[in-house]
Image 1 (cartoon, rainbow, N blue to C red):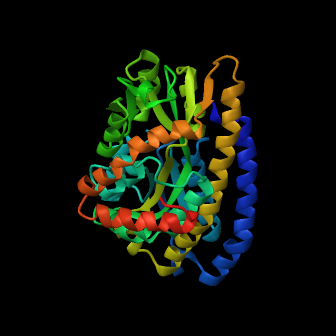
Image 2: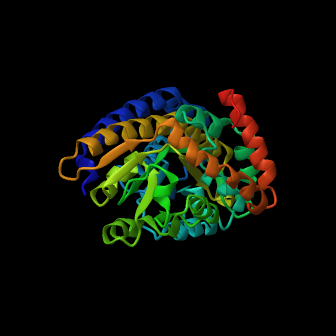
Image 3: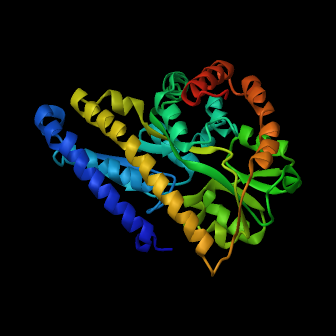
Length: 362
């Protein structure tokens, strides 16, 4: 599949170019003048940034824009090679490479670190975050529970989260329709390697199976698994709708990604270089949100209008969502009891922060 020829990507590239120009105008050349040469001695930097997605998908395009902005701010002294998923190994391999310093930056999905940082599994709690994706992003950006307390848990494992951000609402696809919990009975659901995600689907009566996404297309095609969950842009771009007859707009969760850095590497950098990184991370919050919003909207239309691979797209109504929400609610106590020593404290604080943003009980 040639991601570069997709119309939505060309539109997205135009958006990113505009954003990059605006970013350079606001902080690029001025920042270079304020800081002098990067590192103060003209040193050049060659770094690696690994992602869990491919060219044309949100994480990869985010990382490319991140790299371009740092290159501009440093007047060419910071050069970052961005790697697609699989370029340096599996999701687990990439996390280990970040921890050991083989790579400097990585976008990490907490679902792939749930056995290492148990508290990070809270992102697997369905119907926890606001239904409004913009409100979810606000929570991710402002939450002390996440950006301080949970981040410290990752730093204990040599991973420094720089930001948490959403790639959009999660939806289900299946070989059969998924409209009620009864439809999940005996359903082989592909999940990430997270005990809480797997237990969440057992609550619905499903048979969860952990599987790398590199194996998922074939797994769906051959019937090894019956269905999966992902944001819309990923479902379309990975072609899962080609081997699944049904898609349910469930909005049962948000796919949360972390922009991370090796802490030893980061802490050893000159202060002006750290400042450039921090500034760019802050700028990318809006860029990443707009990127996922555009992709998810346009690629839903692409799935609906695809005549070669017709897909039954069904949106759950509120009564149907409530059936799943009732089954998902007990998983919060499960997380408090099984999600690590600080799970209860972090989740309680996060629920309060969600209520402050939405004005409703989380």
